[in-house]
Image 1 (cartoon, rainbow, N blue to C red):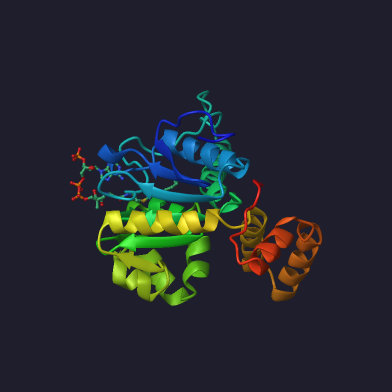
Image 2 (image 1 turned 90 degrees about the horizontal axis):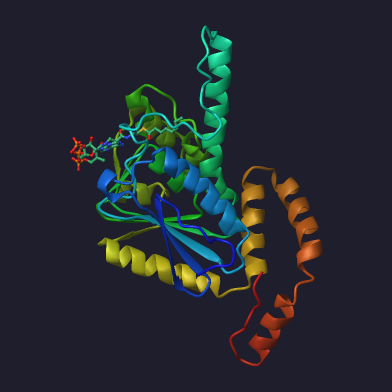
Length: 284
Ligand SMILES: CC/C=C\C=C\CC(=O)SCCNC(=O)CCNC(=O)[C@H](O)C(C)(C)COP(=O)(O)OP(=O)(O)OC[C@H]1O[C@@H](n2cnc3c(N)ncnc32)[C@H](O)[C@@H]1OP(=O)(O)O
């Protein structure tokens, strides 16, 4: 299926539906794809591997079963990531306990940020519940589509905490409407699909999951057929520009393209255009 992604993940299902496309599904349907400790680890490893896999040019991320993601697994409790277990010797003071809690949250943030930092576009297909950590995951993706029965809830305040692995940082930038983003974050109320579309959290709504996945996979295939140099460069430049001034962004793309303009893909694309043919690009 792919050059780099060789191992199976316990909580993720991987499929290669068409050339250059990898379909990653959160795969704990019996638990509504709640994020348990294993899924935190799997998400990070999977998206770090995709970044290095030149068989993959675009990724679709969805959930198996009836919901996209019910958030943190409330039965398995707060995640303990490998190597970050609290030492058990006693007595341990507040600073020592706090140190490990701090490190744990930073580790969990990496699992979500791996999606954003994966250099291939990630298209998120959301159906039904997208709650808590599900919103963290969705907002770290490049494109979001959903079914008409989808709903979004930044549920963390209802379990007594501030969301801390990405939603509060990314959602306001995704939607632009800071007042709406803060309203959702303070109230944990459900935003239904129409409202998510209205405020720009998703860019399209579909009648059912089949329509959603058919369209998302087609869009991913379209992206995967383009120059991988152009597509990964575009994601890199968009991500950088989101977090910097216009001038810094312009300087960054000028420097980036000093190297990337040397690609054969520009010649291939222009030659194909002039010959009225479809361009063919080699792998990244
Ligand atoms: C450092 C920390 C990093 C990240 C932190 C993230 C925080 C969060 O993610 S906060 C959000 C946590 N999630 C929730 O609050 C969602 C809770 N679930 C629901 O609201 C609902 O269950 C539902 C997903 C909307 C589905 O509703 P419904 O179809 O009516 O099913 P239920 O009868 O409510 O549930 C069936 C069954 O599933 C269990 N379950 C649901 N969600 C979770 C979950 N997140 N974790 C574990 N288990 C879950 C629920 O308890 C039921 O189990 P039974 O054993 O059958 O009672």
